Length: 331
Ligand code: SF4
Image (cartoon, rainbow, N blue to C red; front, side, top):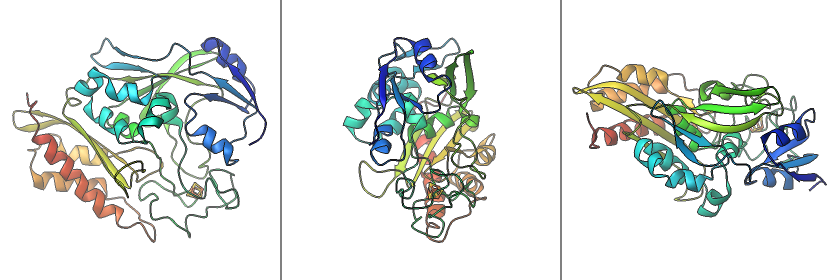
């Protein structure tokens, strides 16, 4: 690991000032991904600015009936929060599906959003990787890619985003709040992650030096009837092959609102808006759920060795929707 400076921010302004004008500064939350990447040489910050003790933690009610989650809230505290479990159960389930208990005790919500892909070539300095070194190539396209993307990838990168939490947040139309030296700002999660395009190293829309301060979850009638299911290669502590976050608002026997987001299939949480359109206004039947799943995967372009993800996702979506119809909170 290369030498770096360390400081603990006294407040948000102090953190922003420390990062201003120095692209080598990284904010340190739980460090569960960043420190790993420093050890293998993918990240070599000049300074770590520790933001974990800033008073940005906790979950509070928002005036619109939603919740605001502080950026330094740990994954464990988020998953256990009674209002998250009651009003946004898929979010609690998604967080609990990620990592191990020890990691969830350390990892922060802000850091979870910013974690990097687990593509093996990304962490291997001897391999070409456009995400780690722009313009160097992509070893995964012709190499080992059975767990890579089937949607939204490009010839420059086929990696997936590793976060479970972000998939549930995508389904709930979350908004990312952040601060820069110019003041507070926010961006919907739907525009937070950049499409891969020809610059997979540019992953999100945060301005340089910005510090994520909170995530806002708008109130929604669909969110209490929500589920997160994750398929992985072993029972615990593994990243998603395919995951589904779904929510339904059922009224008078029809789907009034539907939310579906997929994980493990794209470089970002993949909101399946075409599937949602198939469901809205329709009766919640198994046939309709299968049509929705077909719509969600209609633009899939599997690689040589990951075609299995398409039928997997196509089967998982109706299974989760079936579960939701069976829950008790129909209005
Ligand atoms: Fe790098 Fe992306 Fe290719 Fe993996 S898939 S080697 S992260 S460019």
